[in-house]
Image 1 (cartoon, rainbow, N blue to C red):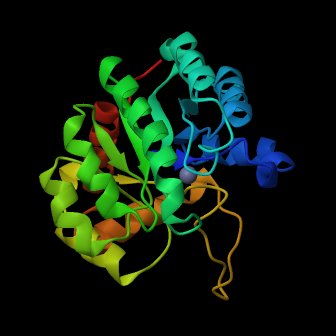
Image 2 (spheres, rainbow, N blue to C red):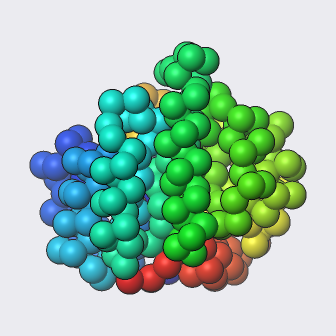
Length: 249
Ligand SMILES: [Zn+2]
């Protein structure tokens, strides 16, 4: 597959109606993806999607910051354990201080760290959400030896620290000054590309629009253009990175 979308949510209700066409477009554009669950319900759906589309869909499961407070961590860890051989990574996991308050952090951290430990013990990568909490995430990561992917990463200020720690930065299909800086300056060996479908896309008028994995080519093209490199060379290296980061079942 020449294109690889490191982060999508194909089970999202927004995509339900057009999913057959979205999968068709993945096949015609030769794009594979890792789709990510975020709680008990979407994790089960994620595994089902992978089972039905093993040629283009790989699965990651996690309990994210949005569901940390309301779902059982023990039940979730038991689910991960049961399905460990179907997982390409643990995710989506992480911290969020954009939608949540500082008093929500202790529970978010408890859930996040338990899953980092699971990833480490099972030699899986962790795919991490860091919105408005990048420093808090970077402070926790050195204690865990798993491979770390910071998804939808558009934080120039924190990029040097994240890269020094050996994190992979996953660049989305949205323009921003920080994306340009990261695309230009991060080692190509530490970059991935993602859509975060159904999020992370704007139409020609700059309005938020529904994203899908076939759009990931935008991020590859952007990196190639920014670095003044052949698209083929960028694709080859980023696919190599993805091969190294994710587990392949
Ligand atoms: Zn996501």
